[in-house]
Image 1 (cartoon, rainbow, N blue to C red):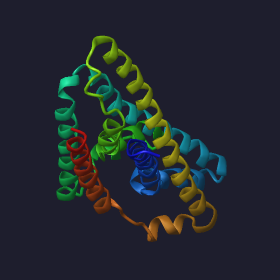
Image 2 (cartoon, rainbow, N blue to C red; image 1 turned 180 degrees about the vertical axis):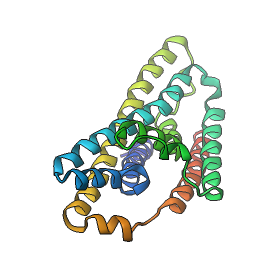
Image 3 (tube, rainbow, N blue to C red; image 1 turned 90 degrees about the vertical axis):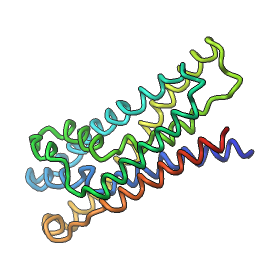
Image 4 (cartoon, rainbow, N blue to C red; image 1 turned 90 degrees about the horizontal axis):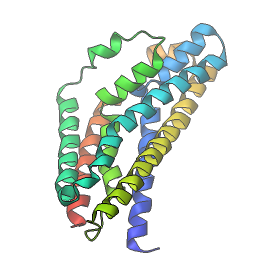
Length: 223
């Protein structure tokens, strides 16, 4: 395997790992799925709730990634776009480090609207934004591909890549979060949610800073 293939494999690995990380993070909603199952006293409610959470998360990933995939026509600004994306992710991480309060809008969403809650939570916490530097690294442009037809071909490929990134990430998030939720539902129950709550906000914010720095370093290294 050459260096470029190894680098691409590492980026896809980052997509997968970020999905697992988002899944185990309670801020992405698995406690809501557990609560739904415990209140309705049936395991099927957990699966239904997680299906809605996964759908909202997937749409949030696409809402962030698709605009960047369409920027391929700005080929000459690829480096600037990737650096700007990295800086934006770092800024989001620093903001979350300073402001630890959860967005109030999430508390106003009705508990039954899990898909909407998941979409807004992913947006508010920068979950989709975290994928942007990784996605742009996967879509790195060959300097020779500057023609109109080449740009159209690259855009089509980037749209497909955006879809696969969102699917892989959301799939990993769903499996990881679902495993945690199922374990809590079957063996730990409501007392775990009320007494043993854990918070990954600090780790989340720091991970955004690290991913942003990685995106900038990767962009500058590809020039």
